[in-house]
Length: 306
Image (cartoon, rainbow, N blue to C red; front, side):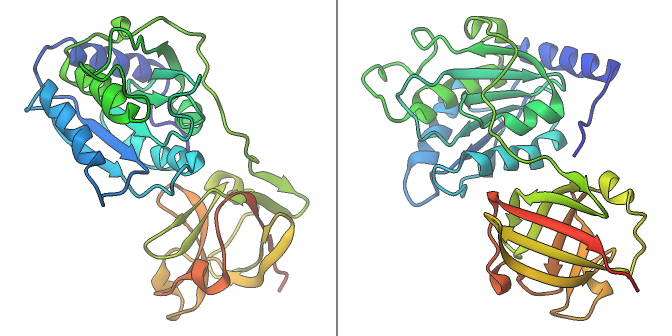
């Protein structure tokens, strides 16, 4: 997926974000929360309570709290999926933090699109940094910016630092420049295989599943796919493997949408992120074929000659 803004529009978005964050108490900038905490206990509610303590007018939204525990890659991908559709100035707090309390840095990333990302610098920002561009990175000065009375708490930075700093940024109670010292304009990144042309076919990974429906999403974008000059209705051989061991190998037709094939039939289509995906019409492809997601999963497709 390509970045939403480019050129002068990046600058305009960043200027708008600065103006929004400079308006104390305006409560016009959304705060979006993502965690792997789930909703079985009070952890997310505590984070929301901290935000309300900053401003009861602050619009607080949830991206997801069902990230697989400790899965930083999944958190990175869900941010990629959602962040570009939020207005410039939006503050995202993402807490999937297996290294909480260790030497990993607490940062606020400002992207060239004018979005802000608050949380641990542990790879969570890999994809939004690529797609939206890095404008600046600041390390949070935890001696100044943390919830009052939380100094002896070492394992809930989502509540004590990240929700607090994110809410203050979104409410305009603190300027980005005052969050902490400016860092080199880079973030910790996770290694993953980029999609590429491979002979007569294309090779990519399975970065995520569509969990509600079991569709298998790839990182092969429609621009790369277009180099094969595909036609709707053509069949492609799709091979999905885990650590080199084939899990699925079959012929799948290219379709515009699910209803173009019979119920329970497979299809290859371009998903909402303009990446290729494989699905069963009104079925669960991932569960049916035992497909997962992550860096160890690969996908290859090649046109089947008539």
